[in-house]
Length: 434
Image 1 (cartoon, one colour):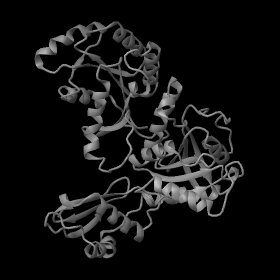
Image 2 (cartoon, one colour):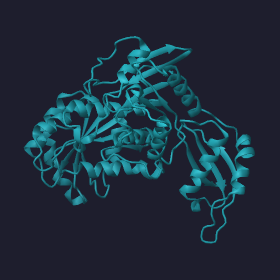
Image 3 (cartoon, one colour):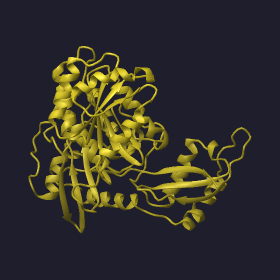
Image 4 (cartoon, helix red, strand yellow):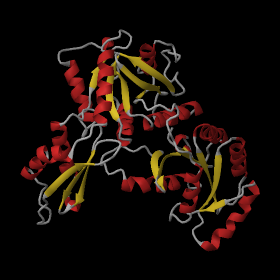
């Protein structure tokens, strides 16, 4: 599975500042998509060529100054259970506090690597302030300043050194399909129907599924790994450690999948939380199929399907090339259609196009509709090719790539989607100098 770094510590020691610094490294380089909703407490980072997820555990606990020690205990327990490496942040100005000692004693009981970062060491003259933290019994202390970044390189060197290779845990090369969505949308029911086993406890209580469960699926000439995740919830409801745990698990499942089946509840419509999960899938560049489940329970006036489809596409804009399947898992309606669509999306996500095809079909469209003139500068596309990435990405070579804006990149993407089948697959367009 993918690697997860958890940042833990008592309130106001600078966890969020460190978190923001770590994820900005990747956001500036990799995340060029505008308008993607970013969760404040979950993100990606990369260091020395290794990518990993970063979780700011404090982000899931309400309150700040008067935070309960029991809440911190929950954060720590979750981090110990789920993260691969933990960075324990303390405040170099405050010195070692009783609460620091208590949190560290908890961390030490686990079998995960814990790195001690002493924050707010803004100058070399303050490094001696870190010596008292050796009382915790650690062999190494990392003096850092989360605000100006000093010392974070040495810390990250050690973080990635401690991380594994992050390979899929089942060791198979089969397509990996993650079933995601809010609690009680019908995820476990779908998996039970497909596998023919009561693998998960299915009850009408939201949040029953606490873990991710992998099931190998074979049927209708298809074979893939099914991943059922704990329901994602709004952060305001993630108070007990079980819920926080399930959020990390769902994040991990999305990251390690090829295609995500986003299950929504027809009786509730496509709400803000559904859109947040969609953004999470989009941010990770996964294929997606939106499933409107419990369609049998809804009063359907004329054009109901078309209207709901249109509403979903408006909410997920600018990405509109998304398959939407209306199902009733209980009544086994359109399940085969869902499977066919999911596998089609997997194939589309892995589709490779030759440069000759692209330049024959797409380049003429770009020459007919070149990018807008910018400050008197004419931009002329010259060549287009697909990049060797895990999802469809294309490079358009031109004379002045720095002047090409997002609306034109969307135009190029739409041209490619019109000519080739990338339905449900993410796509990125880059402009580069020839």
